[in-house]
Amino acid sequence: MEKHIERVMDDIISSPNVFGCVFVDHQGLCLGAKGDASTESAGIIGAIADQAAKLEPQNQPPIIVVEDDTKRCIIHRNGTVTGAIYKTN
Amino acid sequence: MHLWDPVYNRAMEVPGQLGYLLLNEEGAVLSSAGELENDEKTADIIMGLLTLASTVDPTVFPVRSFKTLSLTYDQHCYMVCLSNRKIHIVKKSLNIPTSTNELTVNI
Picture: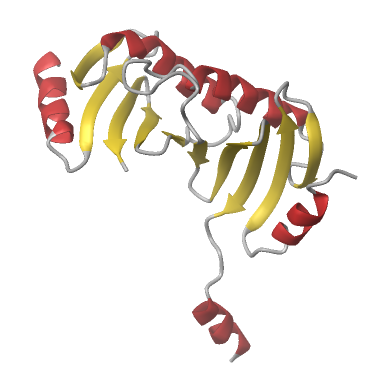
Protein backbone atom coordinates (compact mmCIF):
# COMPACT_ATOMS: atom_id res chain seq x y z
CA MET A 1 0.00 0.00 0.00
CA GLU A 2 2.70 2.47 1.09
CA LYS A 3 4.85 1.51 -1.88
CA HIS A 4 1.94 2.07 -4.25
CA ILE A 5 1.18 5.54 -2.81
CA GLU A 6 4.89 6.41 -3.03
CA ARG A 7 4.87 5.49 -6.72
CA VAL A 8 1.70 7.52 -7.39
CA MET A 9 3.19 10.53 -5.58
CA ASP A 10 6.42 10.23 -7.57
CA ASP A 11 4.36 10.24 -10.80
CA ILE A 12 2.38 13.31 -9.67
CA ILE A 13 5.39 15.30 -8.49
CA SER A 14 7.17 14.72 -11.81
CA SER A 15 4.26 16.30 -13.74
CA PRO A 16 4.85 19.80 -15.15
CA ASN A 17 4.24 22.73 -12.73
CA VAL A 18 3.52 20.43 -9.77
CA PHE A 19 5.57 21.25 -6.68
CA GLY A 20 3.81 19.27 -4.00
CA CYS A 21 1.17 16.68 -3.21
CA VAL A 22 -0.39 15.19 -0.11
CA PHE A 23 -2.78 12.28 0.48
CA VAL A 24 -5.16 12.11 3.41
CA ASP A 25 -7.40 9.34 4.77
CA HIS A 26 -11.04 9.74 5.86
CA GLN A 27 -9.95 10.69 9.41
CA GLY A 28 -7.73 13.53 8.19
CA LEU A 29 -4.55 11.55 8.82
CA CYS A 30 -1.67 11.93 6.38
CA LEU A 31 -1.02 8.94 4.10
CA GLY A 32 1.93 10.61 2.39
CA ALA A 33 3.34 13.94 1.26
CA LYS A 34 5.90 14.91 -1.37
CA GLY A 35 7.56 18.13 -2.46
CA ASP A 36 6.71 21.36 -0.64
CA ALA A 37 3.50 19.96 0.85
CA SER A 38 3.68 19.52 4.61
CA THR A 39 2.18 16.59 6.49
CA GLU A 40 0.60 19.11 8.91
CA SER A 41 -1.74 20.32 6.15
CA ALA A 42 -3.40 16.86 5.95
CA GLY A 43 -6.07 17.65 8.56
CA ILE A 44 -7.15 20.91 6.96
CA ILE A 45 -7.26 19.33 3.48
CA GLY A 46 -9.51 16.55 4.81
CA ALA A 47 -11.70 19.19 6.49
CA ILE A 48 -11.99 21.19 3.23
CA ALA A 49 -13.06 18.03 1.35
CA ASP A 50 -15.60 17.23 4.12
CA GLN A 51 -17.04 20.76 4.02
CA ALA A 52 -17.28 20.79 0.20
CA ALA A 53 -19.07 17.42 0.21
CA LYS A 54 -21.88 19.04 2.28
CA LEU A 55 -22.73 21.42 -0.55
CA GLU A 56 -24.37 18.81 -2.80
CA PRO A 57 -24.42 15.51 -0.90
CA GLN A 58 -26.41 13.84 -3.70
CA ASN A 59 -23.52 14.38 -6.18
CA GLN A 60 -19.99 12.99 -6.31
CA PRO A 61 -17.52 15.12 -4.30
CA PRO A 62 -16.40 18.16 -6.33
CA ILE A 63 -12.92 19.12 -7.43
CA ILE A 64 -11.91 22.04 -5.21
CA VAL A 65 -9.38 24.57 -6.47
CA VAL A 66 -7.95 27.22 -4.14
CA GLU A 67 -6.00 29.76 -6.12
CA ASP A 68 -3.82 32.82 -5.49
CA ASP A 69 -1.84 34.93 -7.96
CA THR A 70 0.88 32.38 -8.61
CA LYS A 71 -0.20 29.00 -7.20
CA ARG A 72 -3.18 26.72 -6.93
CA CYS A 73 -4.12 23.84 -4.67
CA ILE A 74 -6.38 21.20 -6.22
CA ILE A 75 -8.24 18.94 -3.77
CA HIS A 76 -10.37 15.92 -4.68
CA ARG A 77 -11.91 13.15 -2.59
CA ASN A 78 -12.24 9.70 -4.10
CA GLY A 79 -13.83 7.17 -1.74
CA THR A 80 -12.03 7.44 1.59
CA VAL A 81 -8.88 9.03 0.21
CA THR A 82 -8.45 12.75 -0.45
CA GLY A 83 -5.64 13.99 -2.64
CA ALA A 84 -4.24 17.53 -2.87
CA ILE A 85 -1.90 18.73 -5.60
CA TYR A 86 0.00 22.02 -5.43
CA LYS A 87 0.71 23.62 -8.81
CA THR A 88 2.14 26.85 -10.09
CA ASN A 89 -0.15 28.75 -12.48
CA MET B 1 -31.66 46.97 -4.04
CA HIS B 2 -27.92 46.49 -3.75
CA LEU B 3 -25.31 48.45 -5.67
CA TRP B 4 -24.22 45.25 -7.44
CA ASP B 5 -27.73 44.21 -8.58
CA PRO B 6 -27.58 45.80 -12.07
CA VAL B 7 -24.17 44.17 -12.70
CA TYR B 8 -25.40 40.73 -11.65
CA ASN B 9 -28.71 41.10 -13.48
CA ARG B 10 -26.70 41.60 -16.66
CA ALA B 11 -24.45 38.69 -15.69
CA MET B 12 -27.53 36.45 -15.28
CA GLU B 13 -28.05 36.85 -19.02
CA VAL B 14 -24.68 35.23 -19.71
CA PRO B 15 -25.23 31.74 -21.21
CA GLY B 16 -24.72 29.00 -18.65
CA GLN B 17 -25.09 31.17 -15.56
CA LEU B 18 -27.47 29.45 -13.12
CA GLY B 19 -27.37 31.79 -10.15
CA TYR B 20 -25.32 34.07 -7.93
CA LEU B 21 -24.84 35.07 -4.31
CA LEU B 22 -23.20 38.20 -2.99
CA LEU B 23 -22.13 38.00 0.67
CA ASN B 24 -20.48 40.43 3.05
CA GLU B 25 -17.49 39.53 5.23
CA GLU B 26 -19.74 38.03 7.91
CA GLY B 27 -21.49 35.78 5.38
CA ALA B 28 -24.78 37.68 5.26
CA VAL B 29 -26.55 37.58 1.89
CA LEU B 30 -26.50 41.04 0.29
CA SER B 31 -27.91 40.01 -3.08
CA SER B 32 -28.85 36.80 -4.88
CA ALA B 33 -30.69 35.42 -7.90
CA GLY B 34 -31.42 32.27 -9.91
CA GLU B 35 -30.85 28.88 -8.28
CA LEU B 36 -28.95 30.54 -5.42
CA GLU B 37 -31.71 33.00 -4.54
CA ASN B 38 -31.75 33.43 -0.75
CA ASP B 39 -29.73 30.22 -0.47
CA GLU B 40 -28.35 30.71 3.03
CA LYS B 41 -27.35 27.05 3.33
CA THR B 42 -24.95 27.37 0.38
CA ALA B 43 -23.73 30.69 1.81
CA ASP B 44 -22.96 29.04 5.19
CA ILE B 45 -21.16 26.08 3.61
CA ILE B 46 -19.05 28.34 1.39
CA MET B 47 -18.21 30.64 4.32
CA GLY B 48 -16.99 27.54 6.19
CA LEU B 49 -14.93 26.54 3.16
CA LEU B 50 -13.36 30.00 2.94
CA THR B 51 -12.37 29.89 6.62
CA LEU B 52 -10.70 26.51 6.10
CA ALA B 53 -9.13 27.47 2.76
CA SER B 54 -7.50 30.58 4.26
CA THR B 55 -5.14 28.29 6.17
CA VAL B 56 -4.76 25.46 3.64
CA ASP B 57 -0.98 25.14 4.02
CA PRO B 58 0.66 28.19 5.62
CA THR B 59 4.14 27.13 4.49
CA VAL B 60 3.12 27.31 0.80
CA PHE B 61 0.05 29.57 0.74
CA PRO B 62 0.37 32.56 3.08
CA VAL B 63 -2.72 32.89 5.32
CA ARG B 64 -5.61 34.65 3.51
CA SER B 65 -3.56 35.03 0.31
CA PHE B 66 -5.96 33.17 -1.97
CA LYS B 67 -8.16 35.05 -4.42
CA THR B 68 -10.52 32.50 -5.91
CA LEU B 69 -12.03 29.18 -4.95
CA SER B 70 -13.86 26.90 -7.34
CA LEU B 71 -15.92 23.75 -6.86
CA THR B 72 -16.37 21.73 -10.02
CA TYR B 73 -19.03 19.03 -10.40
CA ASP B 74 -19.75 16.97 -13.54
CA GLN B 75 -22.40 19.31 -14.93
CA HIS B 76 -21.85 22.62 -13.17
CA CYS B 77 -19.43 24.59 -11.01
CA TYR B 78 -19.34 27.25 -8.31
CA MET B 79 -16.82 30.07 -8.63
CA VAL B 80 -16.06 32.05 -5.48
CA CYS B 81 -14.13 35.30 -5.70
CA LEU B 82 -13.06 37.65 -2.91
CA SER B 83 -13.07 41.31 -3.82
CA ASN B 84 -13.54 44.59 -1.94
CA ARG B 85 -14.41 42.80 1.33
CA LYS B 86 -17.27 40.99 -0.39
CA ILE B 87 -17.67 37.39 -1.46
CA HIS B 88 -19.00 36.84 -4.97
CA ILE B 89 -20.35 33.35 -5.71
CA VAL B 90 -21.52 32.33 -9.16
CA LYS B 91 -23.06 28.99 -10.15
CA LYS B 92 -22.44 28.08 -13.79
CA SER B 93 -23.45 25.22 -16.03
CA LEU B 94 -20.58 23.42 -17.76
CA ASN B 95 -22.82 22.41 -20.68
CA ILE B 96 -23.03 25.79 -22.36
CA PRO B 97 -24.52 25.47 -25.85
CA THR B 98 -21.94 26.49 -28.43
CA SER B 99 -22.84 28.52 -31.49
CA THR B 100 -22.37 25.36 -33.62
CA ASN B 101 -25.03 23.53 -31.56
CA GLU B 102 -27.42 26.46 -31.88
CA LEU B 103 -26.87 26.45 -35.62
CA THR B 104 -27.67 22.73 -35.81
CA VAL B 105 -30.89 23.28 -33.84
CA ASN B 106 -31.91 26.12 -36.14
CA ILE B 107 -31.44 23.98 -39.27
